[in-house]
View 1 (cartoon, rainbow, N blue to C red):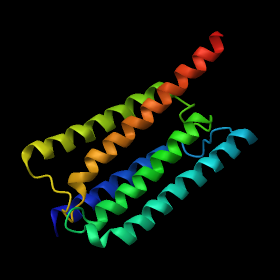
View 2 (cartoon, rainbow, N blue to C red):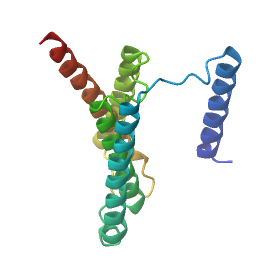
View 3 (cartoon, rainbow, N blue to C red):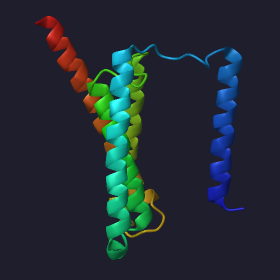
Length: 171
């Protein structure tokens, strides 16, 4: 059994254990309350994110094989998906469909920022080691960097939205 498979199975087991503990303690089933405007804004964000993912996916399928020497198809596909998810999150944040951020915003911002910066540092470490390759079939070395940037951009969007809302309330 490879180390990768052991890691994946361990991660799944820990995730299931956390869900079981949360359910036993009564933390599951709590849903944020959204009004009709927020639900409509979230639906619009889904549409925009899906459209961006679809367009980038088509570009990946059409142009990807000619770019195989420079970047792998798996990297292109993951980057397309990550950009679409980022578009969805930013649009939802900017239109007050806050993706659960409204529950405990400080904790979530800190966690997302730490995770984003950790991934960026991991990506930078790989670049400085000289083991970075766009064409690597194992997309982990590229995805750390892109995931970190996406998470950090989402946090910045949330902070900007809070600043805009606070400034509007002052006026």
